[in-house]
Length: 378
Image (cartoon, rainbow, N blue to C red):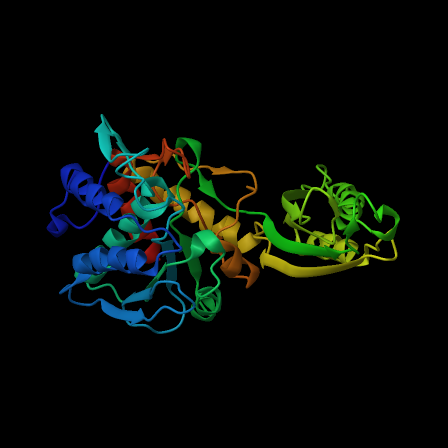
């Protein structure tokens, strides 16, 4: 592939290898604010002193790391919003244990490299290139500390920064063969709590009203909302309850994961969840949660943005294509739901996201950074 970033960046695949290796060793699980902030420090070291890039660091809250906002260009209306995250799912110690940082040919293994420190590097290189060429087009880059846990502290800022933008480019990893993402399902996370009446299982069994038994009635009703033809899935992924083996259980809790393809389908499923009634009238049921990420549908604006990206990718040796709507969410769901043309999956090629085999292709970084830079110029 061809690298067409500004020649004065003076970088190559060796530089990429060294930088990403250091970033992978700087582990940054979402739950560890200090670790996330150390990763931010490394990123900011690469933009320090670059003329034309303004840095804003927003202090973290609720035990979550800082948010970084970088700006280049004249900062008028329109322009591009770049979205990335430095948090990962891997706990501290992964690089010293099950996923050591290592190179095998063009593959670089390490925690968070594919999802998505490689994509963050693409964004940073594109932003530096944009600034050094003195481009006027406004570009804002937000680096999140909490995308892997649903973006609880960054969603509002992402939506605020997205308003009025011409496009949003999301540096989540590329799909197989370097494919981009142009649509994602909406994601709903709900918790259901059932309270029954506890009783001694041996001496007062008839006095008890089992919360677990009621949960076992409700769970099939929920999972029956799955409709593959509509692209809807409903799954109960965690369940807990009871206090002892000889006690009729007085409480039971379970979590529900919902994926939908449209806002209308999200409403249908949410209404069905709200309409569920307990069978045992001596038990009660409480529901909480909601749709954490709205559906990201492939609009006419996103189709046009993708067509533009295909054209810009060709001189870089990238045969860009997209994939059908994917089940996992990203921060692109927020921008797409606001009507902003959104192109996702622009990060590095690789595989093994969230596993002990996570890796990226070293050779994919510079061409994909060049593609992001070209899109920022539009």
